[in-house]
Image (cartoon, rainbow, N blue to C red; front, side):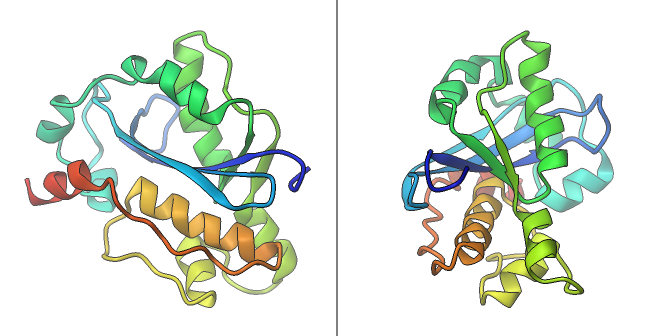
Length: 188
């Protein structure tokens, strides 16, 4: 499947982990069929509900900051265009599929990807017995987050590095521009 179609590697930051929780941030990197980066997307949303304490500790965005952002519906068409029916890929695809897919389901829109790849499951198959979380897989490749907080675009880039490594390619240089809103949120 990979190698014949574009892939969008994405990550979500959310209000929590339940089916009622919402996406507060989406980071995505579109790769061509050769797994070379083509474009990035980074959006922050007002979820309409409060973040759980644990989720806020992970991503660092305050409820006050998130209330100032547009709702997911305002960007849904742009997100669908960005994916453009590419293969969807995430590190822990089960979680990100449920969270991002849930946003499209609430709007009664088709999920914008066809076909899925989970870099965490692929990592476990390729390196049995090693820890497969994004931080551990990235560290094995010499990659890491810039800080302690999770950012959706940064984590999407780390997952790109894992995906490329699984296909015998070096990680691309991480282009972390576009974090303006997230950095302001952390300071708030």
